[in-house]
Length: 298
Image (cartoon, rainbow, N blue to C red; front, side, top):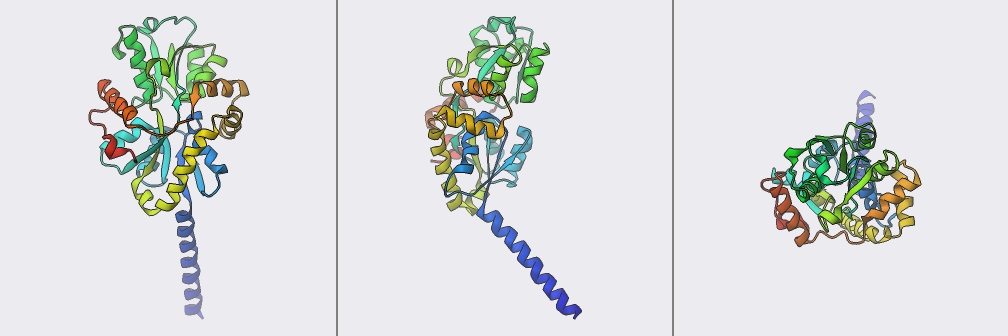
């Protein structure tokens, strides 16, 4: 009887484990941070023919570690972070943008020009980010460089309150935190991203190559649905409804944020990526970024 019970236990355990594997192979797990740049990803939950599990993270390093190690199949991530991982030999592929435009440089009331930032503290979410590039593009307009300001990394939710409290003179970060700076911290927009860097690349949908190889048929459906979602989100009422699913902000903050951002074309073009690689080298973010052919899916 003991032998029979043991065999039954092993059989049940094997069944449970195999069911777990089947479930994980039938679902595409994608990581995100709760920002407006992730809305095409959030909209996947309403897309027919795809089975997606969204995994929420609280910081870029935490999210990137999950992507690099294969704990998730893909992620909506700062493109420069993924480029850096790729250049270090991590198997990652970028398949779509998260958005175009939609970043702003927000400053305190007393800052009236980029020259006024000299000697002041300015916050960005990560040094390997398009926000860092946008800051340097803005400074160049006033004949300044990053050595003329005190650049600090700060968690995005902390930036509006830091601006309001005078700890920083300005910041550049993913939405809706720019809009929050206007509505909550009485900040103002010094530059919009398209004024500094037209067609800039910021966040993208990036896949773990090992996961893609295992789940290619499922993930290809996700990629198609994701790109189509960008067109759906051009309806700002629709975008607002989706934003409310992950962002606990007042409607006026989200509406302002959505006025700045564009989801209509999520393709990563070679010209835009070439421009990005030139800027990450120019501003010391990456010395050897991966080429378009190495990193971007055709």
